[in-house]
Image (cartoon, rainbow, N blue to C red):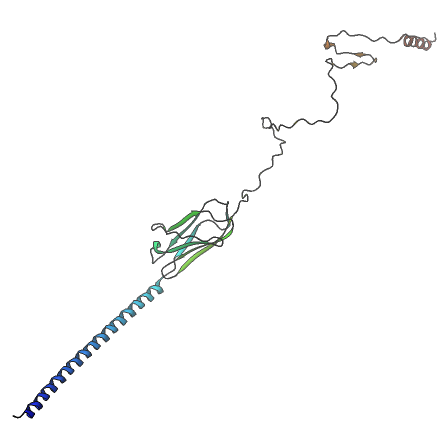
Length: 243
């Protein structure tokens, strides 16, 4: 056999071996593509199922419920006085501890975000708000964004909220206790004070004579009329009788 014949045989052998290797590589690549397509289809189906479940949950969900406990609408508080702000929240599908509760003020902004109690649903905080007239916003939200809220007006002021104090005029009722000592001096009218002689005043009887009070201890001294007056009386009497 010649060298030429051997060379042709070797080429044929090599050519057949290369075709087999190519066919094998092409088959492996096709299998890999098939596996990738299968995985992609599986992932797509899983995502679709998850989205469908979420949509179904949202459609079946109901909003939480918030009930305001305090303060009442129009309530007032003194400046610096702590006030309890409280609500009760419930939810048919979600644990109340997972609900988002917020308290907001038109003046102070968000001032509280309490976590509801698991057993009662109560959510509260106690603090003092700034002075002024507030609009308070109490809100609860669940994981799907469903909300419930309440609004009230609330005033913080130092004005007296208990009404005016009664005025004490000091008349018409004797309580049996002495009045307060004001420490003011007695009113001076400027009129002179009569001297105290130490003896009672004299009294004048019908005859024109004056007497002193016998209780003073001094003897009573009669006052005699003048002699001319007596003679006048006698002359008048004699003329009346024609003597």
